[in-house]
Image 1: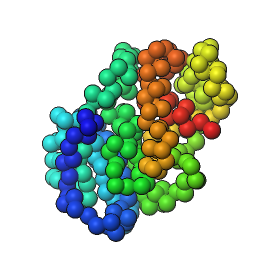
Image 2: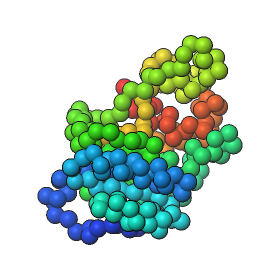
Image 3: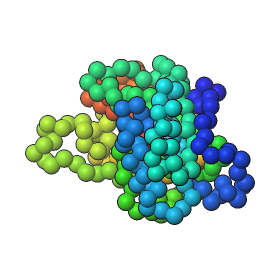
Length: 251
């Protein structure tokens, strides 16, 4: 498998089933230019809970040793963690360059699409963006009940700009009309109301069994290909990582 060819764990990987049941797996990416942000996110979780957290810290090959140094040379050396490599070859042909905001098309932005290929032994997983600071107990988020047949839970993201700013921010509001080009027949045929509120995929509680059963990753890859074929509104190409997940989970 080219996606995660190696696991550079921080602790002994031999765990009993009972220990695994007690763990809360949290996936956070640590990009080269955002290492401090990722460590701040991890610290905010670790400092506010007594739960047994297993951090999956995901990076590209050239950053793996730096991730370990950041963790082991700070108070975070006490955390339970695994460092995992993401191989961007899986994205070949699925994204296209965007010169306006190329940072949003960095490979690690797409790790959330491939959670089942990273998490093999856990039924339930939390994914967090590296700009999330947790101020409460992560156990409460993990205890979120996922309804039968639901692959993931998100929070609504309806913080629209003020009316006087909308003319400047067309396409950036957090409803589907801000993400999709409703002039395209492919989009119209989906039957999604343009005014429907979207949600923020920077915090995800996912059921891995349902995710795999519903082939969520394959669906996401299908829409990534469609983005390359100019299905999306041009203004939102650089936000590919954020707008496909709300589309897949639209109900």
